[in-house]
Image (cartoon, rainbow, N blue to C red):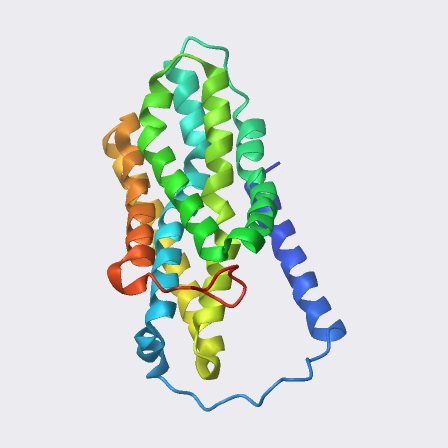
Length: 244
């Protein structure tokens, strides 16, 4: 199917989903009147140390996530071109590698109930960072099965922390500016994805090196530093099993 069909279809679904929420979902009992516009809130939300740690962890996660998804077909095509193995069905396996992340989000959610959102999010971020580092060596080896298993695992750990970071950000935002804080974090996070994708695309035009994907490891490294810096060790939320 042409790419335009995909865009039009998903746009219509988004419009239908928004309409269903607007017309069929009533406001909750604790809804509060909107506050006046406060432009200083953009900077003030990051004064909260725990919120800042969660947000910066999320930013590191976003540096890697969408760029990985964008370049999954590129990695598969690169391997098919440079390997003597059987040609990979790029479309099907790209779907599998990206789509399997949905299962990982469910698993991560259940694990977080016992081990805490921060612990599972950081573990996922660490594993995806390790995947970035290992990627060139997996691309250079000769087994297609190993490649597909590796990319499937990477496809799981790269997204499993996404809903957990959203939870951490929401729970650690100051209640009076929670909506503003969440909007700011999402805007910055998706802006980071644009920079990451464009940078990788530009560098890909300069070199065909499989080591290019090491650049993605910058995100997980930054996120883990933000989460486990000396001043951020106390980042927890109420649902953590042991807040101490």
